[in-house]
Length: 301
Image 1 (cartoon, rainbow, N blue to C red):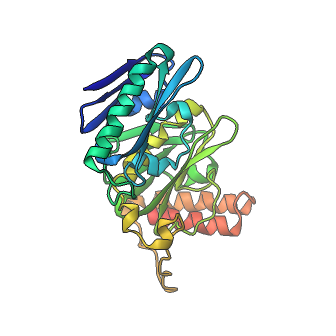
Image 2 (cartoon, rainbow, N blue to C red):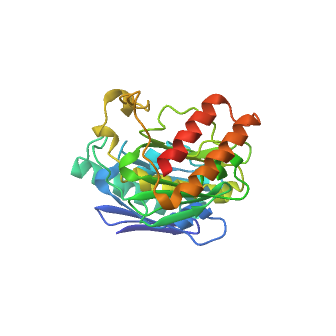
């Protein structure tokens, strides 16, 4: 067993698994503490390095492409302190850090772990259900459905559409960009119907606009990862879509008619359509935005 215990967290390697546990000190970012312990199987590891510095060093674990839904969902955009695969090491523990890194490297050579991209997720995502309250509303995922409940400060367009419920089979992609504190972020759920929508995050009823506490909004990556872990692996997608482009979906028939709402929801539907119509007449919504949002409301019923 190779192990290093630091204020920033603990890494333990037993020859087959690197177990990463975040520290409980207040200096450890909320995201890492909330994400919790991660068990990384050796076959998911691409490499490891210890980077010594003047006052402290850093252990870094590099995973194979496509092995981890967290890295897939965040696309390398996690702030460095929130990266769970990085450990701050006190300078007097440099020897232990080097030993842990060497043990992992030796095991990678002995087991002949391939370096090419993984064809399935090897690291589990966060458990479900998971729910996060952000600046734009609360987003929840129970393993089968995503639900967004807008906050009182959300854009009028979003509040007019009501809560958004998205079934997992309807999702084709999750897009996430962190709130940096200087620039807004977003969490967008791309569905088969909204894949060509060009609404900005603040008006998109399928997206959370992240503009408040960067520390709190970062937790939306938990939901993005939980959903990503249950979507088809990128290796199963077509070549163009695997590179990040949206899939080419068949156009809906011109004579397609939205399904009529259930009787009990009729008044709610009429009220929301009326609110959207008022926003359109007041110039808050363009013709394209009105059509897209109206379609989203009809699909929600």
